[in-house]
Length: 240
Image (cartoon, rainbow, N blue to C red; front, side, top):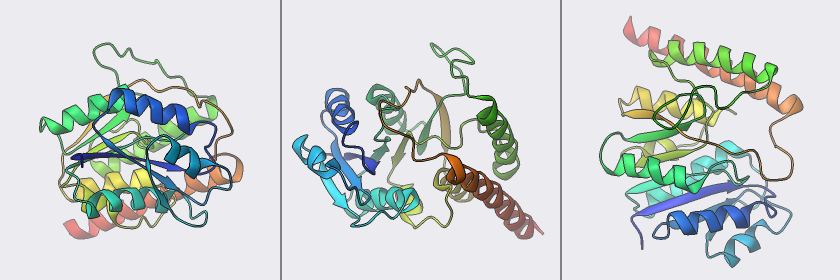
């Protein structure tokens, strides 16, 4: 058994999953891999097993917040010291996750979050340009996160994570909103854990359609704003 597990929340990702698993096997050959199958109706689970991954089946489509918490819960219950998360659509290169895990392993932080919007050595500013609609949403979210976290955070909806064992109990608890990444950051900040936002490159979705679009995207945006407002009110009450 490795001391590191990488989990992948997946719903009907038979088309994209094999390449994601092969990339992980090449860049992180010593890590265990778990696919959290969120009630897929295609061959997602079979594709995962063929590529040597463990599969945690949720039975029915229960949504990304439950899928994410289930992955962290698996890591916690199986005693892993480190845990990574990538999406199943091919957006997160395994080489970037390896960088994040190395940062956590060396003790620089408890959690490393891959960011499309911060720059650094080899990562030029404005390398990722969202659509006008997403640009507006991103700007509003940044302002909200700065208020809620009391620090800037540019890419609060990133799904590329590396965490240590100290963060697992916080992230394994069920998420109460449709904005699990934002809720996770609020939990980590409230617990005083060290969270680094690290510049990475992300790819376009390899194939298929995004699950986050149309009415669902609007619902998530409203949920994010509500989550931030609630957190701000809670922290204000605590400080009074």
